[in-house]
Image (cartoon, rainbow, N blue to C red; front, side, top):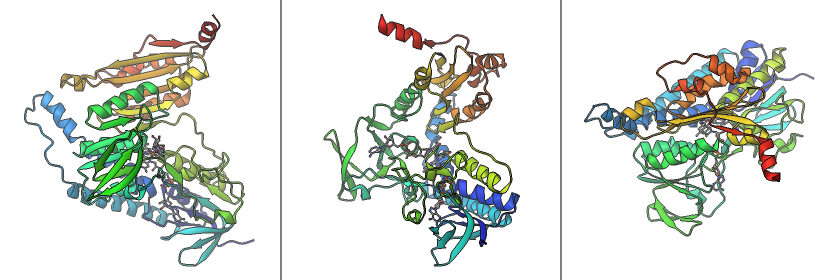
Length: 465
Ligand SMILES: Cc1cc2nc3c(=O)[nH]c(=O)nc-3n(C[C@H](O)[C@H](O)[C@H](O)COP(=O)(O)OP(=O)(O)OC[C@H]3O[C@@H](n4cnc5c(N)ncnc54)[C@H](O)[C@@H]3O)c2cc1C
Ligand SMILES: NC(=O)c1ccc[n+]([C@@H]2O[C@H](COP(=O)([O-])OP(=O)(O)OC[C@H]3O[C@@H](n4cnc5c(N)ncnc54)[C@H](O)[C@@H]3O)[C@@H](O)[C@H]2O)c1
């Protein structure tokens, strides 16, 4: 059977662009890609990139505070002009979008700037009514914000909207305690918005190490976010030109904007998957094996639409491995263990790789090397902010099972700590590494004694005693 193409990629985000570029440019496959919105996808257009630039913009006040502590007596953040920032942001995103498009074109990928749906196991329909056949189809359509399903939810915004606002809200409510809610609470408070965050649990960033979560929770309040824990909205209604919100603790409050940061769902609705034998999980995620192959041999899926680990570098790696495996004669699968990540809070970020202390304890015996201290830079300026570093070590093998950092530029540090941990480094390897002084990161190689030792057997004995 002959096909128009070797590969049709649906979705021009992190995973789809990488797969298409490698399959066509490096392995010579005949590839087409459809993108219904802007090339680059969530990360480039409405995620990691604009978010990180907003994080940088939001730290002026903290920097001015610190510099006053160093003798710059008149240091002030001054007035933030959202319009100026947004114009620069738009220009930067357009620049990046053009680079993504140009790289695909250079690799020989045929681009369709329109929505695509699946007709059958080898056929894709485009919004203009034309169809293309392909030996393989790669679904890389990402995810979309999930809404909580409460009355008046349509009055709220989603993270996509934040980068397009004409002006900043004076008083804003963020709903959720995950990556997006915490990062945007930090950003909006830093940009001068009166920021309220409600979270239904008792500490933000569920899934991260509990000690880091507690420190992040305290920090949000310390930087001026009105963080209300164990609280959830029950309904929204118009209240003049504002939005009135009721909560499950019977309180009520008014805001200029409400932002849902209540998770993301795979974007599989309306994609034509009912025409295929592709299996979905209850949340709409496409079920794939270690080769990103679905239950249909000709259809593959990578990135957020598979809901494995929803991060850009993971989507990119999955897309690249797919292209190498299918078109490069090099079978490569992706391991989803020990993936480092960071939450870009200010002044201290949360960053993590490997097991949390709670997961390590559940697994077996663990020695916890941990330190909490006031970093030199902010302490000199008069800040009481505490930093935390933690290594979790298997006492039998000496293997480092996890590393957690709460501190300035923790994301930069965890990237480097993730290398030895991925390589299977032991605590002795960390100890053998000479410190770089004076840095905050040197604590990672100078923690000599465990702060705590957790022993499963001892707990079991204690339980039977
Ligand atoms: C606010 C925010 C901040 C984030 N920050 C970070 C971060 O700091 N670090 C990090 O690692 N990750 C971050 N992420 C997550 C990261 O953006 C995603 O994990 C990543 O973009 C997933 O890539 P993907 O290729 O699976 O999907 P996407 O990048 O979402 O790309 C999917 C593309 O498919 C297109 N599409 C969908 N359906 C169709 C169709 N039928 N036809 C044609 N095109 C279609 C969409 O328009 C989209 O462009 C963030 C996410 C958000 C929302
Ligand atoms: N720095 C980064 O790497 C980064 C930044 C942003 C997003 N991301 C990725 O994007 C994904 C999505 O981010 P997110 O923050 O939307 O999701 P999340 O899963 O991290 O957090 C969702 C939050 O919403 C809450 N929630 C869910 N349903 C709710 C409901 N009905 N009512 C009230 N609260 C509810 C959850 O308790 C949780 O706190 C992340 O999991 C991550 O993979 C990564």
